[in-house]
Length: 171
Ligand code: NI
Image (cartoon, rainbow, N blue to C red):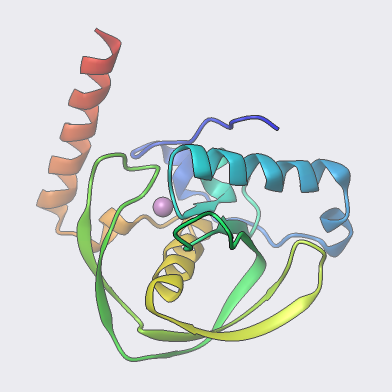
C-alpha cells in the first residue's frame, strides 16, 4: 500500500464533477488497490472520509470510517441520496482544506444507495456523523467543498490562511 497525495483548496481539479464507476472496474485489482491506498491515506492523515476526487481520481466513490478505532472501513461506490430529513450543524474539516474547521448545516438523516467494494448494491438509512460524512464526500464528487457553504469573505480568508501555511512550510 502507499500514501496518495491529497489535492488542496483552491486546486481547480477539486472542482471536477466525477463520473460514475463502471461495474466492470470494481473487481479490477488496480481499483481494489486504489481503495486500500485511499484507506491508508485517510487513516494516516488522519481523517474520517476521503473522496476519490481528493486524490485526483474523478470517479464517484469514497472511503469512510467514522469509528473511534478504525474498525469500520466502508466503501461507497456511485452513492446516491434518495431522501433527506431534518437538519444538523456539525463543525466540519476536510483533508483538502487542512487546519480549517467551520459549522455546516446538513440533513440529519439520509437514505443512501451505493455499491460496496465488491459491487454489491445496498440501501441504508443513516444519521449523525455518518450522514454528515456521506453528504460531505458526495459534495466532493460533485466538485463542491465545505468552504463553499461559507460567505465569500470567509472563504477568501481560508484561501489566504492556507497560502500562508504553505509558504511557512516551504521556508
Ligand atoms: Ni473533504
